Length: 376
Image 1 (cartoon, one colour):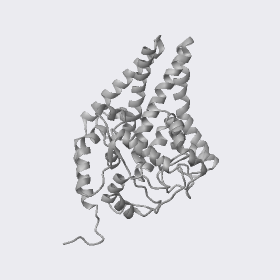
Image 2 (cartoon, one colour; image 1 turned 90 degrees about the vertical axis):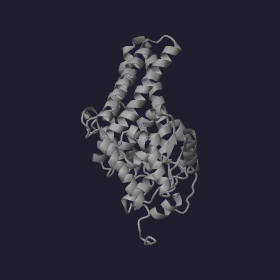
Image 3 (cartoon, rainbow, N blue to C red; image 1 turned 45 degrees about the horizontal axis):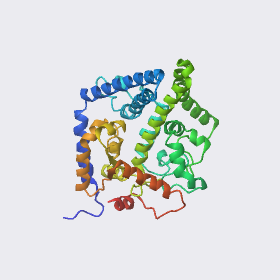
Image 4 (cartoon, rainbow, N blue to C red; image 1 turned 45 degrees about the vertical axis):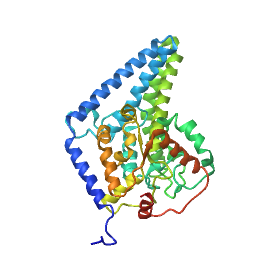
């Protein structure tokens, strides 16, 4: 018999993905904690090696090796280790206490408490929903036609490449703590992405959260370690800045691929999934994957598997890489488009979208059902 008109077209998708989730969560345990411990030890070793090489270097080769080593540490702490820990991945795993989401402090200038709320709750709970997902526009950058066009959007592509990419983590702290709400209006009726209002109390709370991370982090990297080098202050300062910038550019090239593109879905403010299966379909439609080797994927924190990450946000990156072929097959069986390509092609698609959104244009934008049908 044909299904009734009001039947959930994503019911089977939901059942199959729920089965993966149940199976993989049952398998999580000691090996997952052992993996992050080993990676963390490697990261800390790279930090020591990098800082020593930058400090003692008398030639460009040694200096460059120091910068790359320090970048590896910073990149791993931001992505494969830090991003995963703050998602709560290890909260209930035996031996994972050092990586508990409520106590873990990452070596990144972003306030952990603000990040957990803005990313775990608001972004993952409302992916690409205009006015509810704070990441649907990043400061002055318009990432969807649902954000009204303003004059400053004409310059958003050079602004993205010249300012946001090299300073990503600094600006993300402004974003997640609510300081961007203090300085700017997002152009939507809701106006505020993070702060409840623009009262003095809310603004002071945003400043405290931002400075709580900025001050010790930048004092360590841009004052303390350069000062320890005495007459080589400038050299160490340059090395630290280069490692920071490399992490930010690499991370930005990863993150911007996740939810930006002409073929990536976004939704109206009132959009809500009517079923578990439809919620899964919305996550898939609003996300991109891209294909890289495993070492590059580790430096991306598994966010090359953005679709899988949004389906199962608390799974470790190694598990996301493990289940990706299975998730792709499920999507194909259920008529849901699974978007993946090379990293350069996906980044080009995302930057092309940002360029096109720099001009005032607005196509017909439908509700959840219409958007999802257009994605298949």
